[in-house]
Image (cartoon, rainbow, N blue to C red; front, side):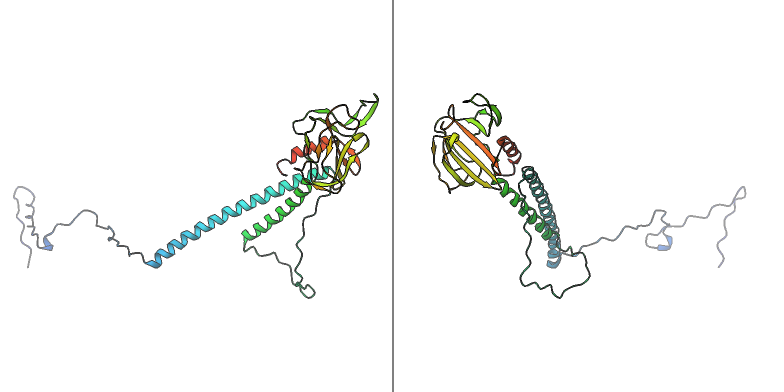
Length: 293
């Protein structure tokens, strides 16, 4: 059928077509929507966590936590290794200065069952599968070296025999108090009160204990490595030759026996039989104070 004829206005343009009636139930009468389309996503409902999912999540957290702990422990072990190496090097410097033999680091002996008579192959770098165990091995090596040099230093007379006491006569040439002429004073004199206890500056073996000429009552202790110490002018000797003594043992009482003008301790350090200035050892002891007991 033909569309209906449009009404014509005799004095102007044609009348506009009549508006279409809108019916709420008819789709063909709905006006177009000029707004944007609704592109919002559909609502998502997560699936509930299973026991296996929770176990996996917890395992991942534990693994990360353990890895962090291992890294911290390895860093601590590496720092301890560096500290032990530095301490050993500092002790070695002092021992070398006094021409004391530095002990060699103990070598790892191969097992008796190892047979190298028919083995070989190209060299390849060792596997680095267990860094933490490697760090522990390096720490063990550093501590072994430190213990070796520390034990050597602790056996030598680096301590003060008279802490807080006044030095009345140093080592070296001086005017002899009895002859009035120049003479070598082979030790250091410390002022003591009569009867005060005397202790050795390092452990060792008593090689002489008795009256010894100008020393009066004297004790001499061998500390090994060619080093010995002498303690003179004592009023009483409390050890005998052959005794093994430690730093805390009392070896005698202060006095004024022998060539002495008053109560004091005459202290000597001898290296290979030759008297050396004890102050050198005392100063070295101050540097070693943080490393030895």
